[in-house]
Image 1 (cartoon, rainbow, N blue to C red):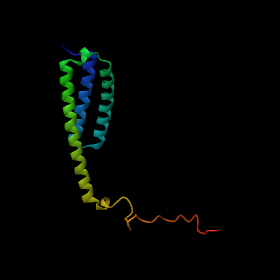
Image 2 (tube, rainbow, N blue to C red):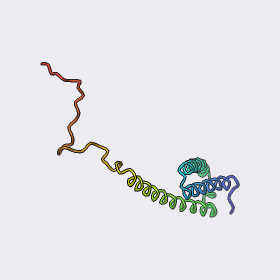
Image 3 (cartoon, rainbow, N blue to C red):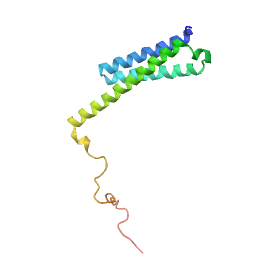
Image 4 (cartoon, rainbow, N blue to C red):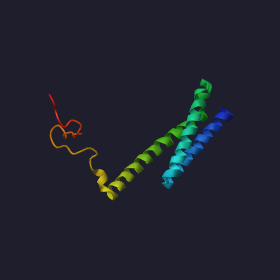
Length: 127
């Protein structure tokens, strides 16, 4: 059973944008990756709306299920690639700019944390 033309066209568009994201990941260009990811997100949102309107018979289509499974498997692989790239970038930044490794908050000076700073609003107490 073949896919209806409007469904096949939408799925082809998602697959095209997925290939663009894959190419941007390989190239390492962050601007191209951001643009390709945004385009893929928009195509996926449109395709998701289309899937919600399908009949149960259409959802059992073997070709549709195979193509969706292929996309899902590819997305998992790309997600792992992004995680690996993120770790690589963090390690490179830590090597280049070691000051990033310092704690975000003030150093603890006692068992209950550091004392607060006085604002100067209440310098005198009157009874």
